[in-house]
Amino acid sequence: MRFEIVAVSKRLLCPDEFLERVEALAEVKAALILREKDLAPDAYEALARKVSELYAKHGAPLIVHGFPDVVGRVRCAGFHAPFSLLKQRPGLCRELHPLPVGVSVHSVKEALFAAASGAARVVVGNIFETASKKGVAGRGVEFLAEVCWRVPIPVYAIGGISERNIFAVRDAGAAGACMMSYFMS
Image (cartoon, rainbow, N blue to C red; front, top):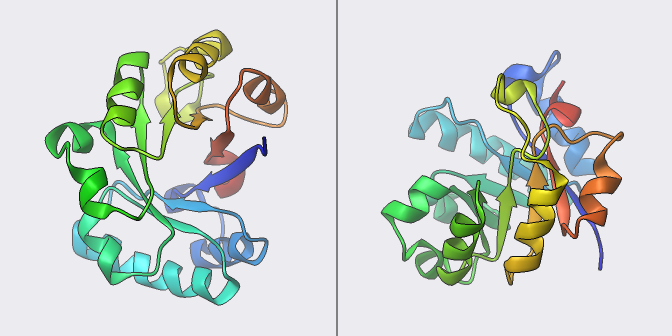
């Protein structure tokens, strides 16, 4: 099984020009979840259009996050939903079919719900302590391994993943790792 590393955006972490950094990721065909949770829908769509053009130019996979209405207006390879959005719209995966939908989860129960709702993958976190969730202890690789064992779809890990611990993520059975700070700062 191939282990995939996915970049997750947060333009506010970038010490340089965000779109230049995004294009560098696109050039090496890195999958990118365009997260940008602080943006209003119109601002997110405007940014998604720019990022989509860069990603299309390089043939790299872009995943829209949080705004399902944007999916039909930009070129993307998938959609990623916060668990709260899936709970509000349990038919979301069917609505967006055949586009694969990933869902952020924080428990085995949530992961099983996402899988039963038609999600193509889950992103489980936070596995390690991370600056993005100050004061929140990491759930650990044992928790990640349990999710991987119990959920019938690919499981990706997020939260505090670095070159020091990424092999523990892979060894726990994850299909991949999502990394924000590593790529954005």
